[in-house]
Image 1 (cartoon, rainbow, N blue to C red):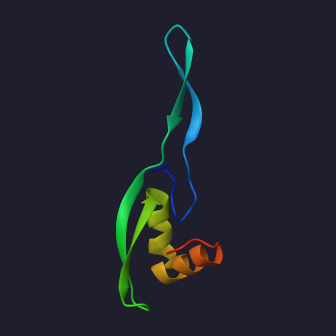
Image 2: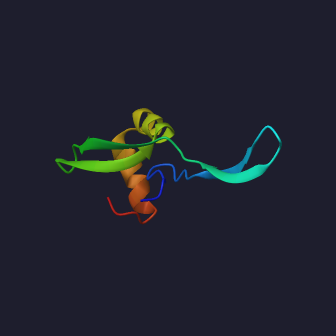
Image 3: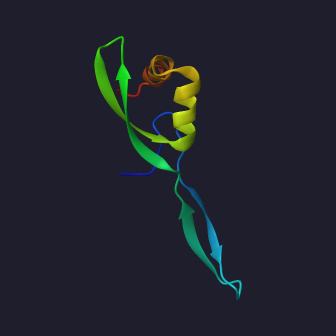
Length: 78
């Protein structure tokens, strides 16, 4: 499974590793993805999300109900 946050859409960043001799090799920076379970009171069930650390902060700030509503508006299945 790819390293993408379901809340923020944040994905991996790409670039180069640069050695001491300045030889460049491709690499990627994956976001800090966590599997989290949240309880949706309106539906009386739990949902599992793959969220980044930033996504967890967004859920804490806005609430799980608002975040799920935004995800469904984007067409994502929850």
